[in-house]
Length: 88
Image (cartoon, rainbow, N blue to C red; front, side, top):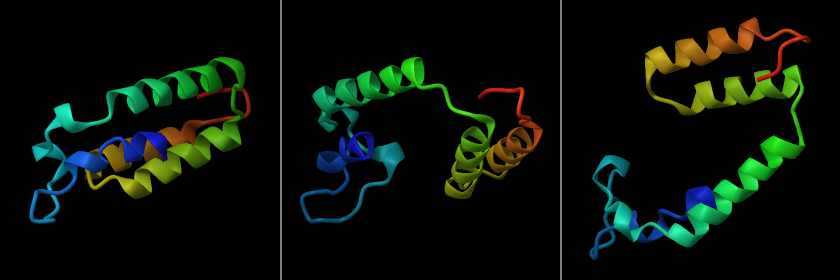
């Protein structure tokens, strides 16, 4: 949620119209919150390895969120290849 919220100031123009991600002024993103989010994720990934079921669920969830068909296909195939012996 933190890394999603960092873009809030750049999401709309002065008239309240939504600005597509590709057109957002990244200089308006909250750099402090981005750094905090990166630290939290790095700490989590460093100290709490996830199992194959959780990794598969993450790939599947990411595939549902993306609009890119090639990316969806890659994520779905990656999820399908995960076995109990393989960690993401």
